[in-house]
Length: 483
Image 1 (cartoon, one colour):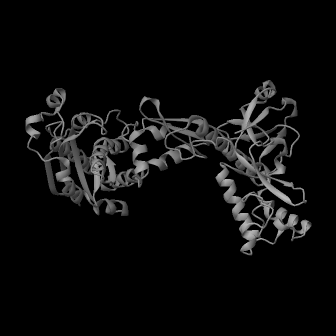
Image 2 (cartoon, helix red, strand yellow):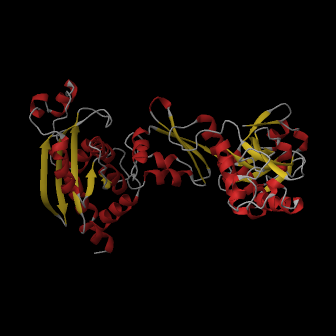
Image 3 (tube, helix red, strand yellow):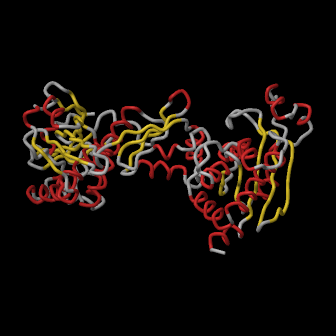
């Protein structure tokens, strides 16, 4: 016996089925739970209970399951059985047919109690597909008919559990313990898929760079993300179970995944930024751009000392005259306070205190060398200021006009030319013909702090990234607006 089949024998499988008042785990409730525990080839226990859903069971559900409102009237509510259920499932593999449905309902019930529930999940639909790929249908009725399984009371918890368990034991006899064990191991390593998504959603996603978008009910945009491998990154959202309430809410709300492929990582980063700021998805923390960026400008006062002032009117063609980009006045003043404290600069000259013709407050504490009183040499003070602010100096656009950053993906054949000007992503085209037809004259684009930081890292260090740049002065220059 191989190590994989030994692994299968070392775990307890909890074959579980539930009946519910409907198909939505967010609005419907559980009416019955049945579990059969299997370990090392033997059934080691069973557990079954009706559950009072706290709501009416629709007539068509009564007809389907045979569970009536009268039957559950005296049954315990889920909160009364939660502790026992959790204890019984602890350390087991949660096995169900179309497991995301049952697992989603169990998680939802625990969540209503303010508790998280998680388990390793094995779906017998997926197990059947893996062991019997030659067949098209893998619903329970098809499995019963195909494999000659015993007839059970369908749409009752223990009846469906019996059918599931019969399929599993049939597969062990038909395919062998090693083959079934290996299939189980592979499936347990796969991420579980949120209950409202198709099971094959990951198979449709590209393994290439790009941006993906999660949508909820009524096409509400939930989340925008990027990756060099879209399928792998989306799968990581679903792997294991979510450790945060935010992750749980996102998973439960998810109804559809959409994506846009790009030729490379830089294009994906820029598209992600643009869509987060323009579309404002619910679950992205960085979903709003600053109303207007703040920077610091240095200019000599009447005495020749360099004085700092906060400015909102920033000229993109003179970025080198400014120091730092901040989302608010408060952030800029915090940076100035840090610079003053670290370099013993004058708070009055940095605009942190009003100029009153006398020493600044920091002078009285021995943290200013006296520029506010004219006691420090002007040249020496100004040199210290320039050194203190050097790391914050913004980088002026080093090219004469727009440039194109060429990204190509050999595997997918996708080619992008990212048109950049003054650290702003102006446009993306996919061929030289599209580039020839593009004109930037008269266009208005918005300077953005996050794009600035991203593009400075990418283009100034382009030798490391091996980006191909082409000069595009013939396209004209767009009007760059400040956010």
